[in-house]
Amino acid sequence: MSTVWNTATLTDAFRAIGLHSGDLVLVHSALRRLGPVAGGADTVIDAMLAAVGPTGTVAVPTHTWKVVSSEQPVFHQTFTPSHVGVLGNVLRQRPQAFRSLHPTHSVAAIGPRAAEFTHGHELGGTPCSPTSPYGRLRDWGGKILIIGADLACCTFFHGCEEWAGMPWANTRDPVPLISIANDGRTFPIAVRHPYVNTWDRYLELEPHLVAAGAMQLAHLHACPLRLLDAPLAAAWLIDRLRTDPDLLTSNKA
Image (cartoon, rainbow, N blue to C red; front, top):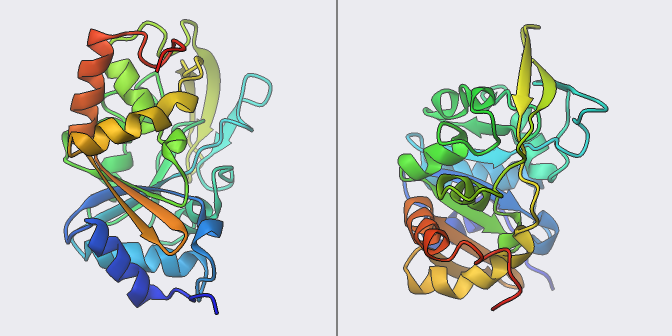
């Protein structure tokens, strides 16, 4: 018989891999890998919030880059759904959630630092600028929890490529887009995007990140869990990219 996860068992699992009270954590997920969860995505969110406690903050990507583009340039903070999983769409609609105004790579968060974490994301010029939520993960000592997926989903690494000064990290020419806030205010935003496919190579980083103490691995039955320490992961990858700019763009191992 398959295990049916509940808030208590998931909270224990998230704490066992390394989430603690007061943590700031960004969560990527492929929830189908978890198997049956009593209450579905809401239960997973409740477990994450319980794992970090009332002083912690839980964030999720609510990306819309598949639907917001030069052909359809309008993003609405409330009404534009995310295409990167059910967890983000459920969390962003909770009354206490804050969602950033970035038109293609927004992030939603709940917790005492959620408003500050998501504020101004649209102003950085790229999805992962130093002042974006991804930059704040690094600067604020955050963590990244990946449930059921692999490192290919880790948007944070795009930030590392940009922060390392890689000339291929983002497009040269910005795309003019429009973000509409919850209160109806409209913001014209020019965005440069990642355009070189490096994400297919991210899985190769895994043993190195584990060896560097920047990532922990665990399993919930058949579901893999990965927990990254954002500052340690960024320091390791930025150093490697500056030493070897072809690390993620060449065919070498």
